Amino acid sequence: MQTTELSIRLEKRGHRGRYVLEMPEGEPAELTYVESGPDHIIIDHTWVPPAYRGRGVAERLVVRAVDDARASGTKITPLCRFVALEFRRHKDWADVLKQ
Image: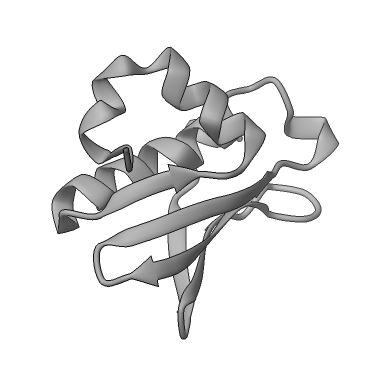
């Protein structure tokens, strides 16, 4: 099964949330965040099982978070190193980057 065929779900508990992508075998990939205000989240962690690294899985999670932020008018602070690097690569995400 291709990872592009898998769907990402959003789970929220209080002010914490995570985007989860169930992998065909083993642990799910995830991106976690904390809501720090009504229109602001801090992405603090991404994790992809070793067998699926280098396949764009983490980037898919970030893209979903960016799309959701755009739809809701939310700004993102990328505390996670990977997410910060992705924001540097994708200048078109500047509209959701907290300055």
